[in-house]
Amino acid sequence: MSDQAPPLASAPVPALAARAARTGSSPVRDILALTARPEVISFAGGLPAPELFDAEGISAAFREVLAQAPQRVLQYSTSEGDPELRAAVAARTTARGLATDADDLLITTGSQQGLTLLATALLEPGDVVLVEDPCYLAALQIFSLAGARVVAVPTDDEGLDPAALDEIAARENPKLLYVIPTFQNPTGRTLSAERRAAVAEVAARRGLWIAEDDPYGELRFEGEPQRWVASFPGAEDRTVLLGSFSKVMAPGLRLGTLRAPAGLRRACVIAKQAADLHTSTVDQAAAARYLTACDLDAHLARVRGAYRERRDALLAGLSAALPEGSRWNRPAGGMFVWATLPAGYDATALLPEVVRHDVAYVPGAPFFAGRPDPAAIRLSFVTHGPAEIGEGLQRLRAGIAAARRAG
Image 1 (tube, helix red, strand yellow):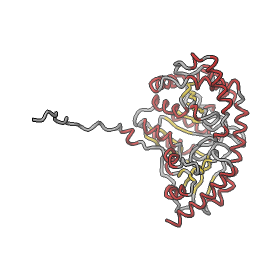
Image 2 (image 1 turned 180 degrees about the horizontal axis):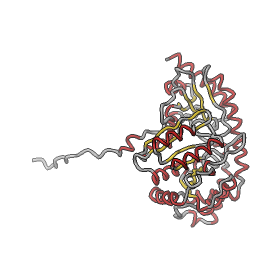
Image 3 (image 1 turned 90 degrees about the vertical axis):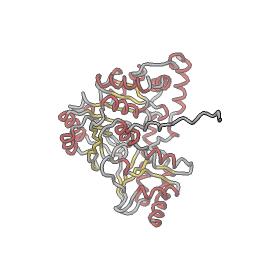
């Protein structure tokens, strides 16, 4: 007789949650992985220019807080966030036209977490969320994971259409509108003051929350700053303003802010306690010290100057790089140009051959919650200098031509 035990019967492991199964990976992150080779000139990712980081100032801030208060900055902290950092952000927010106290703010692990916390605190499965079409990709992922039903609101060259918003809100009974009103991702568009006021009025009359995402507002190259939607009549008590240090200081810090009415902010704090207890104590302390000891506005002036040159270099070369009949916009700031190839072109189908020419972009189709435009592309102009942008556009022209010949 064998002394070997008979094999145990094994049942299959349970399936993934439906929300995980239905939510796909970000095409932008996937493209970044494919184009990580150093020889690739990438217009794909919205990556701030690393050579413009104030590495010396940030390093000094870390050294100072670790030298002066190591036991505090290496310890657990409050879920709401470092009081000094919240006070500094509140002062900057107030100076930009929206009266804010430190207690109005929650520090998050990037503004991405802020939107996730908001979805956790606010959305039930099946709730309707309205989004600009096209929309920031990661927001679509967040709302999918929350089990929300995402409904697209049409846009034009000036951004979200308030009349369409009103009509759709009346029909769909949404709980939340998500909008990036300034230098939107992916299109680079900015809503006018008139449209912002109209959005606030619709939200108040139809009874919905607004999530106003503002990662790019301080990257303005020209024109006058626009007021936050949160500052318009009707929006004050129903708007969550999301901010980020990623584009103005450094994305590796993973620091963001959430400004919300007290009841919803408290719910977001509880959601954060469940998510990660609190954002990195030492990173918050260093950011607070940086804002005290360094001139962020002077740093931003240098960044804006460099980004303006890069935007201009991209715009100057697009007519030669893209097929005749293509269209594109001229953003007044931010990181992105939105272009549309002529009818019959499929940006996704072209991309593999374009990447073989050591250049990349992001096809526009995945950004749409409604009917996608296969001819749309998003081009980021901030990562590379003007000379590299010029070379990248030459490669782009050759890659598109080769793809068309092969097709």
